[in-house]
Image (cartoon, rainbow, N blue to C red; front, side):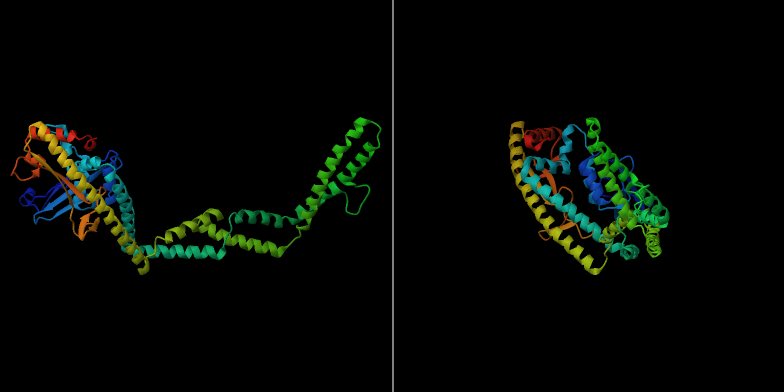
Length: 430
């Protein structure tokens, strides 16, 4: 039962209400198994394994759980098919498992199945994501509405202040400058006088530019070539000092004391600090919080319009998924007929001339309780990671015999020969 097989009431001990069976599956990185577990929303333990539980009550009802989540019994069957190998008289008995039989068909069909299967899986992933989001929004609407209100309040508070990137750092520097304007003016004025000379033209305080000008005149009038060659270098120094003097002058013009401006800047800084105390360490962090909040809010719309839009998208994807599933089924049906004929021909050379192989491709019918149900040609079927099809290998032992599952219809020796016939079709094997 833990493998998704039939649950029998006779397994419940007399006097007890339920029977339980539990098993641990080690995923081992198997892609198909991991996909099944992920789709079911099951929790995987730290060692990479997942626990499966099956319960059968005396009234015949059965419940299945995987990784702590309630799942359809078919999910356990899908998982066991991916992970459990049967060993017997012939180690190739794994080829008789439904999942492997489907894989045999897929390998034999090649691109005819590979292409629609890839398209089916891509659409299925999107469909499952939309289904999960719709379920999340529907079941947690009150909680998400409360979270959205908190985010909306925070965004309104941030938008009211409208901080700019790096603004807190710029304000800190501006406040320092405004608070120390007298000291800065004194330093800049002294530096300007040292470079350009005194503002009243005092000849005793010519400044660096005046001194360099005098040096240039002295060297230019010299008859010594070495001294004259130093003149251009002094000209370069004069140009540089002139630029510095101009910049110092401009700086002094912008350095007027402005108590009103200082008060305004301090108030702005206080507004920013209220944000950084609540949302992040600095303004850039506050802006990042706001961006993340807007993104989160876009997934929290629980209005009827939003849910209706999601439901519409889910239904559209379900229709597309059904179309790909149908293409996939048709490709498998065609490949199954061809492969069955080829295997039957192989068996004639293995002393089973009257035997005939049939390969059926049937869709797994489910009801609306299956979370992975999709309607294909008017029927609800299970949309698993590999499609909606169950593949089964049947053997008609002789003319007039009914076709039976090959493991029931064939003896050990016949079973070995059937497997040899399958192995004789290279495309159907690994």
